[in-house]
Length: 211
Image 1 (spheres, rainbow, N blue to C red):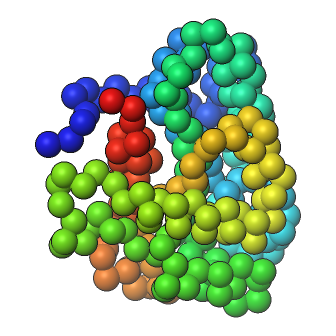
Image 2: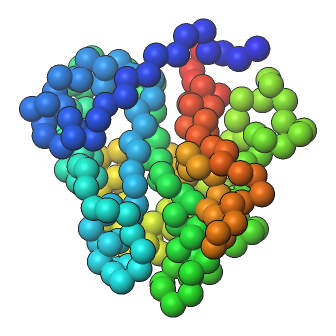
């Protein structure tokens, strides 16, 4: 019993979003979408990689998040006349397990950032008391939003946050992980490989939709 009758997802490769010419091919979808999810790997942001130089990082590659965000902002501006008036924006920090791993690693400026008391460390929708008719926990979303912003600032990604404010001023921040929580040395988290909070953006958008 949820207010979603049909779900259509357009998954655009980051490389197609790196240039405005190729991104313009998706102008119709961008204009009509109820929700635009901007998925960003924080460990691919240049300033973050510089700040964490010498620490284990994923191989550099893919589209520049700054270019993609600027292009998205330009495309939204170009399509103002036909833009969905109820459109929402979610900035989603991916690979959160990697950030947890950095926090658990000593001798870097992220050490100790992620503590058990934070909202980003738990998923209320997996609680046994969660009900099917409760699509999202809005208060929890607000806490995650503020904590995600603080994490990005701690990662020294302030320039990216500023650009989001300029291009997507009403954006809501989320954290997700396809694998779940980080492993510990050679031991997998007790939850195993289980996705973490990946439905949050869609739940949030649907629960706050104008009916």
